[in-house]
Image (cartoon, protein in one colour):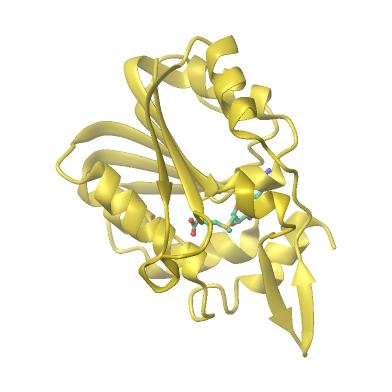
Amino acid sequence: MLVKKAYDSWSETYDSDINLTRDLDETVTRESLKGSHFNAVLELGCGTGKNTAFLSSVSAKVWAVDFSEGMLSKAREKAEARNVIFSLADVTKPWPFSENVFDLILVNLVLEHVEDLNFIFSEAARVLKRGGTFFVCELHPFRQYQGKKARFERGGNRIEIKAHVHDISGFLLAAKSNGLNLRDLREWRHEKDQSGLPRLISFRFEK
Ligand SMILES: C[S@@+](CC[C@H](N)C(=O)[O-])C[C@H]1O[C@@H](n2cnc3c(N)ncnc32)[C@H](O)[C@@H]1O
């Protein structure tokens, strides 16, 4: 099943399914960005808007994009903040934004579905202001090496969504090649899963 189609289908239950990875990412995002304030934020692959309301509370304006109409319509239904603009966009295609606009770009649980990290980092470097932050939080490569992928259940069937494995060095190389400097790297476990491999990895890059 195509990634976009899979997320259109998952959108019906994405928020209500049991999903420690989704929940941990929400905690990580709040933990990592609390106390900061931003003028212009770009959220890539916003999904059902799990992080968008929080972002709208720490920024003057948020642009939230996703290529799944199903996910985006759930995000729009929930949105109460007036400072958020949702739009349909494929982040693997040239981004419809000018250079040096955003002081924060954020991507959560999306890049496993994107083969070419370099394209994402080059577009992020282009549209970020100098001094701006690119925050990335993704399924930890250790879990990817075990074959873990985003997945959900439909009609009794498990649907695994096509994913690309990205090594830690892949993120670091894509950043370095595009002039983004690593400021922070963290590995995260869910409180219900403390003894397993780290579930998420987050990076904070700066232009
Ligand atoms: C696991 S969800 C994560 C959603 C949200 N960021 C979150 O943390 O809950 C992955 C999202 O990435 C979106 N996505 C995947 N590939 C994309 C692409 N090429 N362009 C835009 N959105 C994409 C999917 O539609 C889906 O909404």
